[in-house]
Image (cartoon, rainbow, N blue to C red):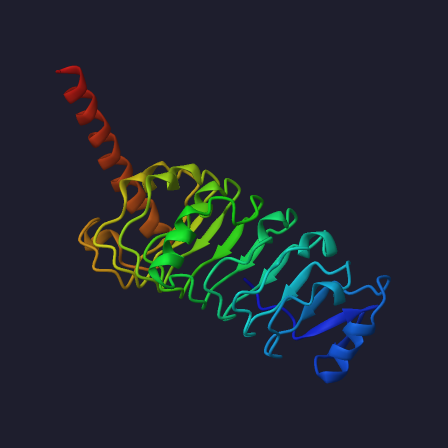
Length: 256
């Protein structure tokens, strides 16, 4: 995701973010036209929902200690919110209420601790409705994830998924449901092979997996991280293996 601007826009003018801006937020009226707002690194401990202008479409809350904070009411206050950064916000769970932000298309949750404890991991895997269904860009990079949150597999409109710098060793078969997926970044995980299900992600054009102990597909088809040529070869290999496995299962079933 492009870095959000380090200021807020009001009436076409940019103001720096400092104590006076926080005061302005507290006293701002609903008719103040702010579309882009950065509140990064100002030690917020909760979502300042009641203080935000309803016109905001891009919001940066990154690098704040939002551990345990709730996003309930955010969708009502910011009905047009399109882009949200919660990167490096000390999150151990996807904030409650985030799934109701129906206009949200870009969400950055990188650099948190969503992998968390065993209990938090189990909760993350079971929460199938924790993310807005309309997302097209999602980053879960740098989260110590051992498994992908179940909510991800329900994002049929998702085009870019960043999962690099985690502890993943496998992907669930539900990745087949991500029919719009174009970019998948799996670098620096624990994969020793790419899941054959990727062969059915027909929209996929960029596939990154450097930094994994990959033994399949062979090295000659993974010579660059996000290149189109790399992907076109590896997807063909994945498709071929998937079709062979399907044919083998069919023969085995028929022969019974």
